[in-house]
Image (cartoon, rainbow, N blue to C red; front, side):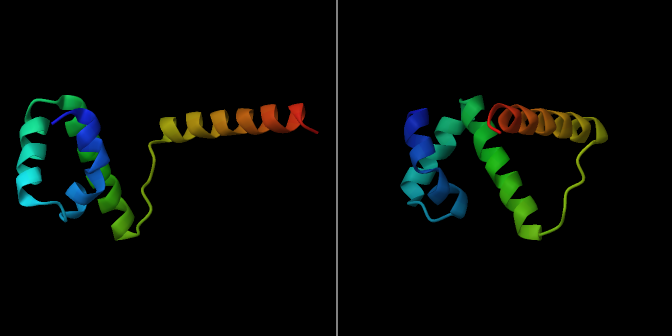
Amino acid sequence: MKCEELLAMLNEYVDGTIDPAICAEFEKHMAGCNPCQVVVDNIRKTITLYSKGQPYELPIEFRTRLHAVLRQRWKDTYRANP
């Protein structure tokens, strides 16, 4: 299985609706492919956070940088297009 094939069937894999034979191929591929492991892990964590419906407190440093970037992009967008 190639990374592209894994990504094409990722939703079914994470939802648990994929054919068991293909699931075994997924597991085999991910055992040797760190980038695909990271993608699947991030999706699972995102689903878990979202399904709990509780806010997630961002670290202050990240939140500060995020706000600064968003403010700058807003200024760049609306100053350039009055």
